[in-house]
Every structure is written in structure tokens, then in C-alpha cells.
Image 1 (cartoon, rainbow, N blue to C red):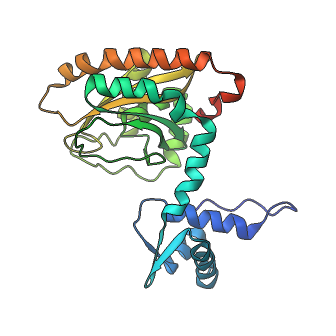
Image 2 (spheres, rainbow, N blue to C red):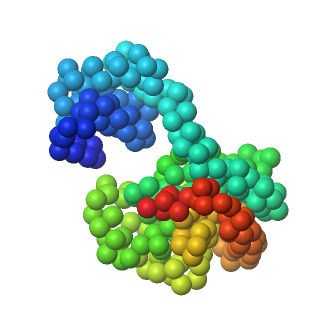
Length: 271
């Protein structure tokens, strides 16, 4: 997917800054490394401009070079962590997530929606090895993740269809992955009615998760889930084991938020 077109010029718009940020987005889309030509094609600029942008980011420490290929460095994490720190999400939810993870013996996470992706803003794992490793700031598609589908319940059907139209084609990660929009809409409708959703080995073989909404002033602003690699357990048993604890944790999280002063609200995360 190519970079989004740059906004029309204005007296306050700095084109070079916009292009530099576009390059960071291109580098962060999942590829381990990219070439100058790839960046030029995605950003819609010539090779000389792409090379200057990459060299500038390399000089600033956000990009490293290995021969003809460029990749992000750990320095970019500082930008994301500053955002998460300002929200205070990890601090607010740390006790709730730790208790939930310990009770279930599973990894638990909180995400928000950013367009057609979810972004991890808080996470707690038990002291055991999991097949999936996700850190704060990690991004996954909304379409085949339990938290993504839960966050989609906050949108209208027309909004979801428009989001789908602007997203790259969804590829099946496993034979179980639902790739039809109509099927996804049915799942989202069911989640909207029941207040929870399960994704069973659609994102990764051997991984099952359940998500519930987190509300602020009655509005869904985030999603909470628990994930298990214990797929030898049938899906009904997983639901009976994890769903009550998830719903209780969501209730406790919402009680904490109600006690926070307005400055700590993060309703805007669901936009």
C-alpha cells in the first residue's frame, strides 16, 4: 500500500517534515528493511529525495543502514512511549492487568484502534513462555484480532465498510482466518450484542483469544483481551474459564477511570 497523499501545501505546512514522517511510517509497516527504491515508490518521490530522507533519519539515529537496506532503530520507541506515558494507560491499568494475568495464567493486553489497526497500549504476561511476543506500540489488523473486532463494534456498518475499502486485502494467516467482509460484519454484530468476542486460531495457529470492551462515559475507548496457547482446551471451556475474569477486570478498570480527573481521560484514543 502506498503512502497517503501529502496534504495540499499551505503557509504552515513543511513538506520535508511531512515526507520524513511518511518515510518513518513506511519503515514501520512490517518489513524488516527497505531499499531506497521501495521508499521512493511508496512515498511517491524520486530516488534522490528518498535517499536524502533516509540519510537524514539515519543521521538523527532513527534509521540504520546495512548495505542497500534501511531499517528502524530502537530510538523510534521513544516517540511511542512518550505518547503512551502521557496517556497514563499503563499506570492506570497495571494493577488490574497484573491481577488478571496472574488469575488466568495468561497474557492480557489493552489496545486502542488506529484506523484499520489496533495498537497495544498496555500488556501483562505471566511467567511462562508464549508463542506470540508483542510489545507496547505493536500493531495488528483490526480484522482478524479479537480486540480489533471488539473495537469495530463502536463503528457503524457504513464506517466499517469504508474502513475495509481503504485497507489492503486481508490475507489468511491460517486456514481458520475469516477474510470475507460480510462474515466479519456478522461476527462484529454478534460481539456488539453479546459484549465479547473470541478469535480462535485466526491470527496464528495455536492461539486463541477473547476480548471485551473498555468504556469511558459509556463509550468504547479500548479493548481488553486474554490470549491462550492452550488450544487443546475446547473453545467453550476457554470461554467459561476466561470470560468472567475479563468482564470483572473491565468493570474494575472502568471504576478506576471514573475516579480520574478530566486531564487523565483518553476518550480521544477511540477516534
